[in-house]
Amino acid sequence: MSLTREHLAQEIIDAGRFLYGRGWSPATSSNYSTRLSPTEALLTVSGKHKGQLGLDDVLATDLAGNSLEPGKKPSAETLLHTQLYSWRPEIGAVLHTHSVNATVLSRLTPQDFIEFEDYELQKAFSGVTTHESRVRVPIFDNDQDIARLAAKVQPWLEAHPDCVGYLIRGHGLYTWGARMSDALRQIEAFEFLFECELKTRSLSHR
Ligand SMILES: CSCCC(=O)C(=O)COP(=O)(O)O
Ligand SMILES: [Zn+2]
Figure 1: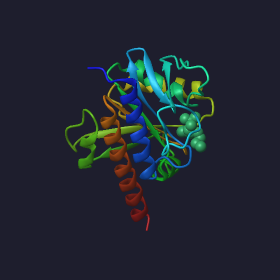
Figure 2: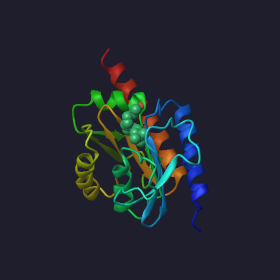
Figure 3: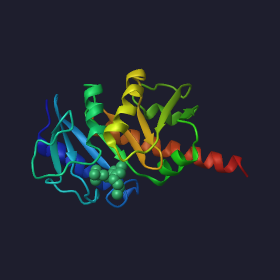
């Protein structure tokens, strides 16, 4: 059964209230989307406060990132969403957040990835069934040219079909799922793991 545009828009609005409330989407940061059809996405418009979204604050785009609703300004990061829908047809929702922990951890990490190992909470990620696994999260350098950034992300996605999310250094997190509830679960898991990692690093440097 396909969900109506209004239902999908409401999922985006509810996600924004939740993520803003947790402090993971401060100010007008972040953007969220759901798949509207096999060839279209429904995304937040640019520059809105994500804790105060209304039904009119989303717009449809094609998977090349072109707005299908003239008069509305699509998220500056539209291409980072639509490339995920093109990459994997089972993806139904994409969330991008700007938490303090994602920002600090990505800035503190000189390598181009972080890896989580032996955390029970890794099992919150789709496809992970045991703590005895390694979840590698790539970190891409931030870039104001989103097409250029998307071109750097693309080869990683193609080489890592099990990738569950990535960080943009000093900027934030992208993760996704079959449904909005899956993407939200993964955001929460990432935030838990980022905090564990930062606490572990700070305690082991005493
Ligand atoms: C004030 S945050 C800077 C832009 C950004 O990184 C973001 O996530 C929000 O951009 P959008 O165009 O989707 O509002
Ligand atoms: Zn952003």
